[in-house]
Every structure is written in structure tokens, then in C-alpha cells.
Image (cartoon, rainbow, N blue to C red; front, side, top):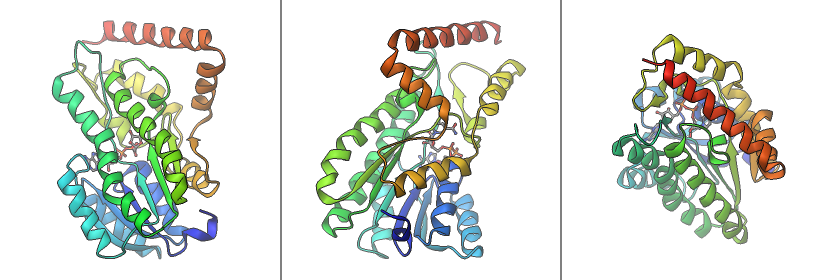
Length: 283
Ligand code: NAD
């Protein structure tokens, strides 16, 4: 999909009410795309729609849905396909962050993170990509994974289960969908300064303490803005790149993992020790 291709093309964006999803929707609107926006939060979705339309963008549908529910995603697909037989681009951005050690994570937390972050994109793919194939859209599928879809960060077992899953689906579809002319882009953000940074749940840990605030501050200092992340994503789509990092630190860590495995293992070990020290100081 080249720059001029966005004009008049239909793009579905999940997680469009906030953070990276909202910024991607705004950038695609500036590129002339016809947007289909969705999110769990209907009120915020309405305000994002209004803001995009006020600045001259085109929003064909803004339909609230819970992506972890196949029924709701099928209803969303019916609403979108009533406007266009198929979309040209699907951007799976919506997600949640639930971290924690295995001894603290509840079964419900494992299920919810996998339900939203992995089953959500799967529901969207199964409800939208077959129509793209049938109508020969030759478009683009973008899946937002995470640095935690590449490397073994502390406290990230459940989150990484979901994000490595998204990476696995993308790695296969990258080749499977090529025969239909559909490009696949896998996005692996590091820190991005979005409301997610405040909504992170860590099983069994009070995230409002000054100790945890210091950790959050460390994360935020390294963070790129949602607009910078959105630019990396859209520029990656324009170049039809498979892997898109939104910050250099993650590109570096990924290179360490592949080319210097012992150094990567040392970095992960140090990160685990730091988190264990922090855990001991937490109430
Ligand atoms: P955000 O919280 O600002 O936005 C996420 C959006 O997803 C919200 O509007 C939320 O309502 C929506 N959402 C959550 N659960 C949903 C559900 N069940 N159905 C439909 N919508 C739902 O977060 P963000 O930082 O913009 O995150 C976007 C994506 O980027 C996520 O997949 C996240 O895992 C990933 N990511 C973010 C960071 C970061 O540092 N912010 C880092 C790595 C990966």
C-alpha cells in the first residue's frame, strides 16, 4: 500500500478511543482513509469520531464492541460490511496490560489478557480478512504486539503469552496472505506514553504506591508519544514492512537476543533481579 493508496481506502482500527489506536486513526484520516473505528468505550469513541470529523477526516462507522467476544465482533463486522463489502486495512491495536508473577496471577487475569490481546485480534481477523480476500482488496493487516512479544520481560508471562501469540499468527499470515496480495505488519512497541501506562494491573501489587510510581516514571521517561508510534506504524505500512519497532531500545534488545544470546540472557537476569528487589520493597 503506497502513500496515495490510503485515499478513499477503508481502514478498520480497534482500540481507536485512546492511545496508539487513536493516534493511528488520526494519522490515517490525514492520509485520506475512510475510517471504521471501534473500541470498548463508546463515549470516548464518539469524541474521537467527532474530533476526526471536525478536522476534515472521514469516519464511516464508529461502533463500540468488546473484541474478546466473537458475537460482538461479528456484529461489528456486519455494521462495517453494510457500508463496504470489505475493508482495505485492518489494524488490531486494542489491548490491555496485566502483569504479575505466576504465583500471584489469578486464573481470571490469565484468561482476560489472553481473551482480549490474543483472541481479540483473532476474532477481528476471522471476521474481516476473508471478505478482503473474497473482494480482492490486496490490502494490509496490522497487528500490534509488544516488545513482550519478542523477549522475556519480568512479570510478563500472561501478557507475553498473548503478545507472542499475536506474533505467531502474524508470522504465518505474512506468508499465507501474500498470495492474496495482503501485506502483514507486526508492531512491537516498547514504552509508549498512553493511558495504558496508568491502567496497568500487576497481580497482587498496589500500583499506587510511591515505589511503583518510580517504576512507572522510569517507563514513562523512555516512552515515545502515541503520535510517534502511529507514524512508525503508518510509515511501516507504506513501506510494506513486516516488523515495525516503535523505539530504538527494543530494536537493540531484539538484535541482542538474536546475535548475542548470552548478553541478552544477562540483561533479562538483571531486569529480574531489579524487579525482585522492587517487589520486596512493595507493601
Ligand atoms: P490504551 O489503553 O491507551 O488504548 C487501548 C484501547 O483498547 C483503549 O481505548 C481500550 O478501551 C481498548 N480496549 C481494551 N480492551 C478492549 C476490548 N476488550 N475490546 C475493545 N477495545 C478494548 O493503550 P495503548 O498503549 O494505546 O495500547 C495499544 C496497544 O499497544 C495494545 O495492544 C498494547 O498492548 C500495545 N502496547 C502498548 C505499549 C505502551 O507502552 N503503551 C507497549 C507495548 C504494546
